[in-house]
Image (cartoon, rainbow, N blue to C red; front, top):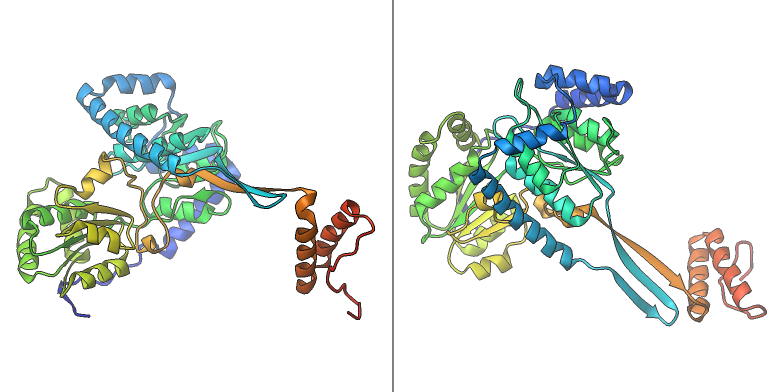
Length: 439
């Protein structure tokens, strides 16, 4: 296999330091011990926020009224697509009942999680789309209570468009809390909320670490790192589009990898020549963020064949994988490891990030090798049941008893023995050798 680097990324720096781990553990412990008072202290210290932790209904309505109608229409368009796709996902799951043998019935139920906590990041950008992706999907899945936490801006609070989006999607409560304190408030059930059974949504390193440390006590969607994106392009790709797509994802920031994988040296050179101008045309702070990502985390890889290109993509397992190459059906069938796949030059990762309908909360840092992104399935528990009638009891109980005794689990065996004795008094069964017997 021949893989050459036209541009190679710098050595990746650890995104999660010991300092972050220690800081998050300390804040979580302090909030759990001190309750809402400590949470509000951190909101003031870290967010510069002294207003109410739970946004009142009247404030949500006033903020929604201030959102321009065109933006409301756009948010509704995106919401409708996301909800429709989530409903299609839900329709693909079903409850099941089957009689495996006469008298032995087993089945599966799908039970929505009772309470979810969704984190909506703030910071450099106002993540309207993250509000739509998390809350809409939970709502369609049937989650009974959906709380959200999002960082307020000092002096102004949560941006009106985010409040409108959260309300449109059906959030039951909105917390003006960012970072670890927002995650903790939802996990511990503060401010009148039910404790979250699952925490979802993207965030910075502190948010990701808080979710990681709370996992086990609550469920989480995934431990997410910096966003990443790969473009696979052949000689027929449009270099302007490829460069724009790489830069568009690089603006997430200096820790976000972007990769171009191609079988065309001419395309590689053309894209690399165009990227600096694309970056320079961005406003600040986007320009600085994209420049740092391209300089430190950008990579251009040249392969000999499309199979080598696909194999390289599978090794990386990118969060976003955009194919701008001929024979899209081949690529869709061949590629195996990605968070979400974007096929053809007419699409772009930004469509999926904002409004196309598929979820943008996706596995990063190679996690796409073993997990998918946020979906209705994350909010459903597939639980099983069984029912046994006398018709199935003879064989089932005898097999259970013999396997249990072979394993040395006599208590298990006797629970099966007793049912045979009561259901078929006087009958003899081969139940395996009991401890201490000579058989």
